[in-house]
Length: 96
Ligand SMILES: [Zn+2]
Image (tube, rainbow, N blue to C red):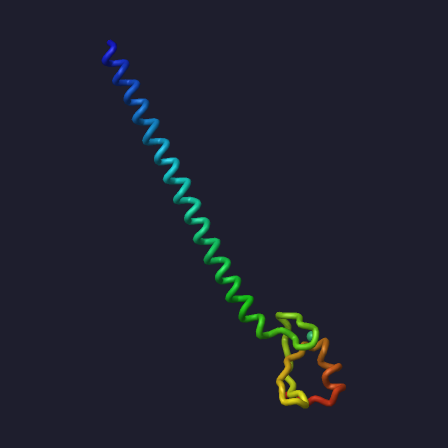
């Protein structure tokens, strides 16, 4: 009788340990996956932003607009959006 109770108790303790470790593993694995995907997401977002950075309007600095490129009098090339285009053309700059 005593042995049976001890065996059942031992069984419960064993199940408890297994459950605890499996929960811990699941948690750590889950957080690892989340952090990895977050890093990947951040990297892809950063790469995307890096690409669009080169497409900023030289006048109003607004990214993501369709730009027209002009050669300035000092030899630089600037890209301006349709909003800033009239102002640049008024300066006598010609589109490339
Ligand atoms: Zn602009």
